[in-house]
Image 1 (tube, rainbow, N blue to C red):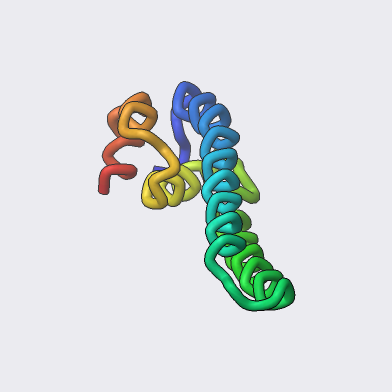
Image 2: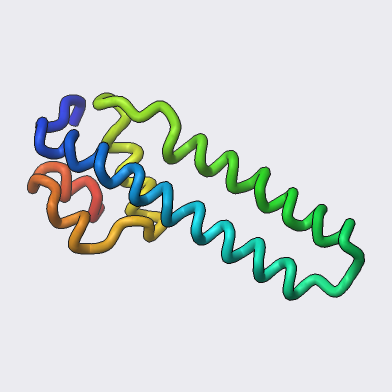
Length: 103
């Protein structure tokens, strides 16, 4: 599926920012858990949080950067696989697009 329908493209662009917001929210919650869990020094907390941010930064690049019609399907599949889209949001896509998302 190289070219996606206009309706799917519009939905991808809308859900892209929604999923990114969810991803960032999950990351911030994880940072809070690290802050509460790590009993070592502030430097140890910093190192743990820094490692998390580096990992999450790579994930953001893979999932959210370079959104184009030609990359939209890959991005949506990544977002869905990571649980960043609800079932209702996924079902709003066309039958063709949804078949790729649900695997």
